[in-house]
Image 1: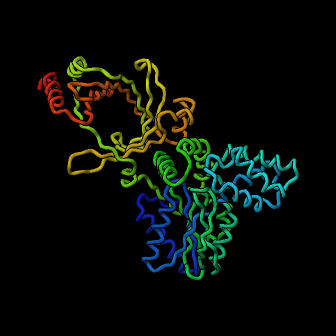
Image 2: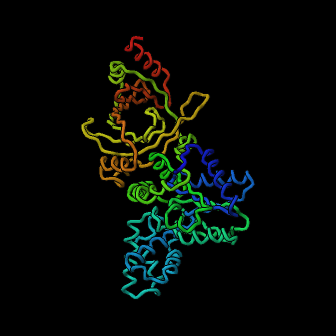
Image 3: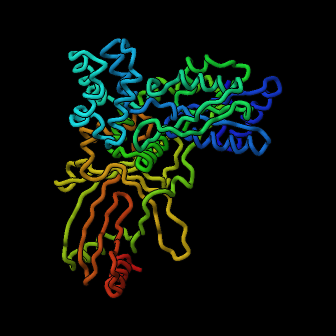
Length: 460
């Protein structure tokens, strides 16, 4: 039966207890940390390593991510499997030669027509003319359905062999995978099994039964790191935007098409076999990350008469009709300021709406000057929505399948006006009232007049 925890200190403590019990009977122990993509496995491995060192232990941590075959190997292996029934004996050499060509090519062009022209001469020696054409065709077809989150992406056999080498006191070269070039890169760093008593291996498929079966369960400790679906999505998209060259459109498409199905069918079932399960939801520090923006000066009123007066005495610049749909997770407070929002616009005064953008807003910064500074992450910018989904409903269904709750939904009307030489926006939010937002530079007279007008119509 798994032991569930919700705090990193408790999780680390539970593992320390199990590790020290194992070390009473064995010279070394293996700790496996598996879980969802972006659940915080690497973070947990770092925490556990720090605690172990503080207690006098000597951990070595390796990541299954570092055993990624790279785009040259992933795609080549897929072609070998689906087009040649795994009959290509020199597939590793073929992949190595392809790597030499595509490593420095931008991500979205790795297997385009120009890249294929460059690949052709370096692999010709391995094929007949007919098989070469079949292989090159296969490269482009497999590239179209690339899934970074399935077991075949990782060299599980090599990872298992490295762990066993360390257990026997041998040395291995530390592996490293670059998300910038999407390939393995050399490190020149060696890890010595004689210098460790705890081997930590983390990765989304680290609890795959075939891999776990390679180890002696008497000195094996297993962990599963999980989180709520909203956190998992935000972490993945925001992380990849920082660490990879892939666009948010590509990452989001990949997330719902491949990552979520892989998680549900191949990763989540392993949760039941874990000794310890850590529910690692989004932290306060994470919710404060993003591009910062300052909230403008704003007044609120529920008086339509006051708003109508201001609009009638202004120059109207633009009216927009919006609908915002908010995605939440189970047990998330309704007043949560960790916002994930889909925005739609209407061209027919609110009769129908067309989806436009997907945005995350984190927690406001605490400041002494009274200003509201809030982080924002534009996940899908305006104009890119239909590069991911065909309709609003398709988007909502994807988030629902991922485990997110849909709602609430807010309809808004915005009037952009010039009022007594002051540019401002009046925003009506269904069920909340009207918000008058002033653009910089501020015109003191207009602000005072607006304030007095609202007070007069509200009877203050």
